[in-house]
Amino acid sequence: MKTARFTYKDIDKAAAMLQEGGLVAFPTETVYGLAAIFDSKPAFDALVATKKRRPDKPFTLMCATVSDIGRYAQISDLTKRIIDAILPGPLTLILPAKACLPEWVDLKTGKVGIRVSSLQTIQQLIFKVGKPLLVPSANKADEPPALTGEEVFQTFDGEIGGVIFGSVVGGKPSTIIEIDGDDHVKLIRQGTLTLEEIMKKGQKQP
Image (cartoon, rainbow, N blue to C red; front, top):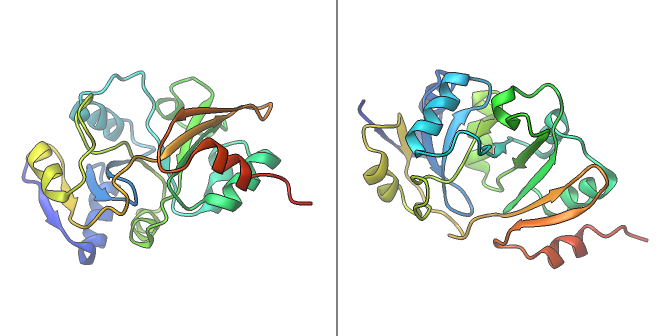
């Protein structure tokens, strides 16, 4: 396989590659991500194999817009306030999953991690694909996330369909929190945002 070098002008080509089940890497506001279309089991299997990742570890679902989140996850009042205050942005929410999700997305956990990037180029890419993407960081398992297109290319050349070359904004992975059905909030991974900042922004307004 020859890995294509894309620029932002090639978003249509990258979207078509993803629609056909290929893997494409792109910069986000945190680190480089490696994407596959969410509703294809062969694409999921390729993502697992390429990253050398445990098949029992779910991938984050990246949506084009905030309004898409409710199609795939249960949203409580607290969750909505946090979404309205922070997303799109460097935050991944693990929420109760809706039954419409393929079993390889939630891996029968009843939970799904969802993110909406603040970069319009990524929103546009997902919009052109026409459905969400599974997007872990672009690296092999247990290795540091890639921060440049060249790093991704060196790691995955010949293994993925293409790399969109561009600049990441932050260089630090997104913060991950879990909000269960009873609105208990748990910090899973500290990233750009602290849990205190998130909860403060999600407070009910008087």
